[in-house]
Length: 88
Image 1 (tube, rainbow, N blue to C red):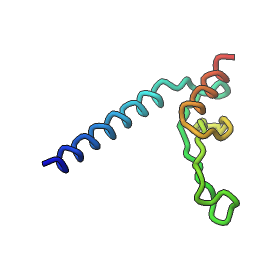
Image 2 (cartoon, helix red, strand yellow):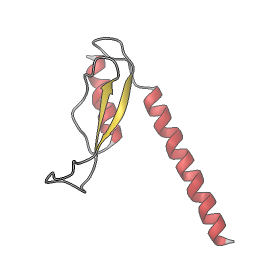
Image 3 (cartoon, rainbow, N blue to C red):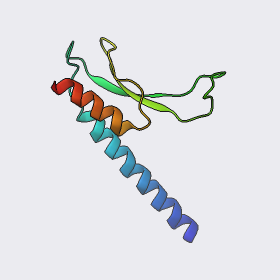
Image 4 (tube, one colour):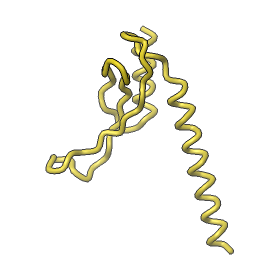
């Protein structure tokens, strides 16, 4: 019984995380250059790179013109950077 409860709790936590992430993406301001819709990209280290198997980076990029932020260690920092850039 405990195993089933653990699985249910893990699924609820994952659902909550996905909902927070969706809200984060939905709240992103449009691109300051073309008005396009941005997206959050996860940048994984390339095979053969010095950081292969290391931490991923996150960036916010416009789907239309391709402008974006630099890579950050977490999604929240990338979103803050994008939002700051748009407001200026």
